[in-house]
Length: 328
Image 1 (cartoon, one colour):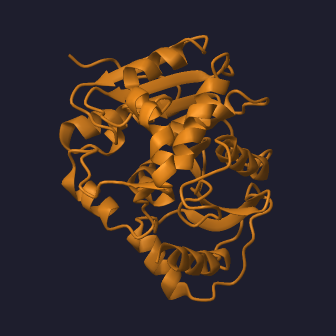
Image 2 (image 1 turned 180 degrees about the vertical axis):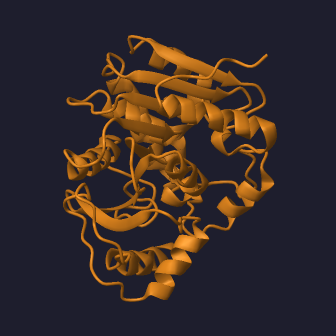
């Protein structure tokens, strides 16, 4: 059921233009036209918490090989810079809805993409031929905005989106002044034993089911929204697990591009091997600012209560190039 739904939304959104003048930095290569069904468009934006007032919104695509990659942009009246958002595995742009709203209120323009095989983008569901395809998609978005989107540029990557940012930083012409990693995935949790059983598992199945009872945040409203999102993913291709491991082997000698690197991590994260991952990133940069959050889980930026407020305050500061003073 996921593919027809995604394709239907994609056709609707690829034809959609909000009735505003297009700013000069609007991306090259975005295919847009007159909305064929504005009711469906409004429904999608409302369901994903992307109907954000006081900004110009655009949907379009950039091409990566044979794939059309779904991209969106939000433009405030006056932008102090641009924040690029890279979502995690299983997710899509909709996961960022409340954060996009906050960034816009703080004067940032926002650009986001659905990674290959995710959300409204083309590709095999939640699988790629290589991890590099993800950073190819990010680079295509960058190219569509180069010389147009307000500077400075900041990138924020969560989980696998953090891995995409790290892979992008291995390549030339890294364009981001500030790089914010939210619980990035270098090794996923259970790295050793999954690697041990993977050859045997691949003989019998090509996908593994994801548990439906999510516990990656203390905010039950956030988890409920994710659980009932029709674009959320619930199966993991075994091939994708192998590609992550291949990327790790190929990246042992990696050196990351200069940037202001920020690493935000919860100590109750059971999705990534964060102790290993922090050391991995630190060893490949000229300096990294690490902030740990006691009690925070994998979706640390979507935690509830005072803890969530503290994480989001820190994210906002990192986007501006600094961290707030640690609270006692």
